[in-house]
Image (cartoon, rainbow, N blue to C red; front, side):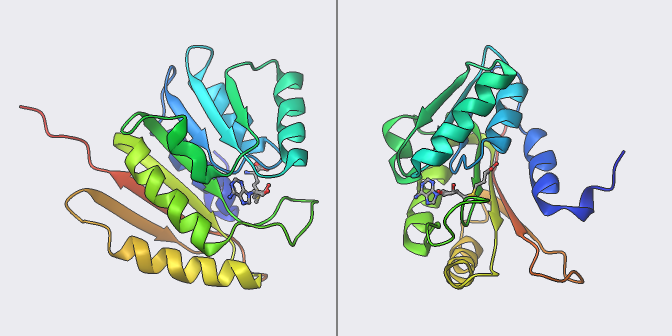
Length: 193
Ligand SMILES: C[S@@+](CC[C@H](N)C(=O)[O-])C[C@H]1O[C@@H](n2cnc3c(N)ncnc32)[C@H](O)[C@@H]1O
């Protein structure tokens, strides 16, 4: 097995996938180049569904092209903000919601996720995930908006009700160049009997 703690984006997804099974509904809140969307599409399979969002036409185009190349048709793509998620996906229904924050790789660095919108999107994600589901956030604080976004997200998730959620925060603290960090928020499954 490869060393999972060299690249936070891969670690973030590897853990996320353990919460997803074939046939599930999942959300890629920021599809970007479609890399994560494709991984999610493969994992839920033909009987499952991925809802993927991005505010940039270029990202939707890149994601569509990647899915077509790999022959996946189990993804609904929305050229919309993830703030609109709740219009498409019922509460307590998704196995996972994945946020990869920041700007489109190879795109305009000025078009980025912002603290206010991301906080609102996270609240929606907490209600959309089913009991036993996960919200995964990959955070970048190497740019100005990202630093503010990270600060506000951490403040918020620290206060999440510990009877309902577990929150884990991972940072590769000895690495240079501000590598991304990970937040995982899981909703406790209901007890049986
Ligand atoms: C770091 S990239 C995502 C990378 C992607 N996961 C991949 O696999 O390539 C962040 C993306 O978030 C998008 N974005 C920014 N604000 C958004 C919002 N409110 N709703 C949805 N997407 C947003 C950007 O356009 C950008 O494509």
